[in-house]
Length: 457
Image (cartoon, rainbow, N blue to C red; front, side, top):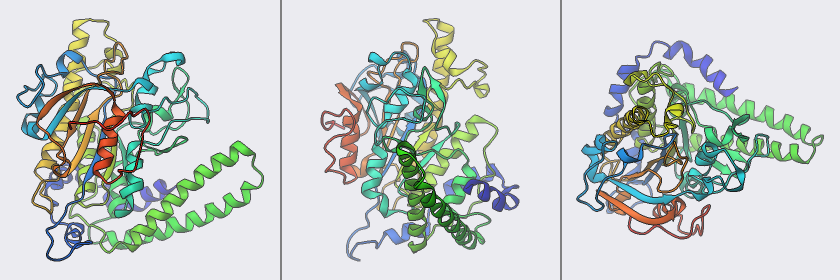
């Protein structure tokens, strides 16, 4: 309902927005009010400014063509592989991590369903429950653990983005709910956080609708309307609760938890001293071309980090098992179909082209982050930890060990980028625990199947 209201209220204003001008303008929004406020937030005037640490997770589907992914030699003197070659401009700011596994994504007694398990376990580290019904069960994801620790410091505890469908129900993979393949972020075992696929609605949620001169008033009006809707729905829900059975009461409680989260976001936004107002037009909507779409969503994530609107983001570029074609690079076949190449060279070469396409978009994002100054003299990328990867290693064999993972950024000086590191076989959740330590969540003893902290990152 909220999305419909946003569409109605903003359509006449942003319908003629020039998307290409918006894309060009994203790189120009550097001196924003929220950055200035960070200079003195909780600091003595004599202390040097401290930049916030951002954490991002980017997911690409169907694994990768292994031969083209891995560098040949570990260490700092490594040559980028064919797939990783677009990262040459930021090579000193990334780590290629080998040896990380998600054993809970393997079949075991659950049989088929590797795509659902791959994405369902990617940020949670748990074995998701095999069900296509409403009794889904995963685990809290690393981004939401971090949001519980530092989410209160920003207007939005976290942001969830996608360039794919938004689905929370239905059978998507051999008896597994679609919720596992189309949601990376999980607030709790039964509560996925649906990502936003529309860049215009995402922009309006962050900064308000309309032209820059109109956004403050429009945002205040929208919050008032949202509060009225929330009050109405909450009142109806309380009267309904008395007539529900046990399982329905649980579902209602999860729904009300989501409503309370919206209420809290509105309250935080209302009490925030400065709501950033970038001097760019809102995007017109979802671009027709997939490459433009991906780039626009990366730009939205960068702008959210840049304005300190949030410090935590997940980006599901495409849902696991995606069978999208890629006319941008001359491929009419679907990605998932090609991933089952059975060793055929022509199909493997096409998978490698898709991997390279995705990596080019990621490299563009990292280069823009590296070129964005932060308040402490470093770049925004220096003060970030961005994971790029897939819950499938080899899309043909459906393996989940030695996953393709890049960790970008310096973590505010706490990471050692510019390397290819081959770890001994370890749960990927160990990496996440080490990342949580760096955002101050040092009291988290375990995440999913973790066995400890990942050293040497």
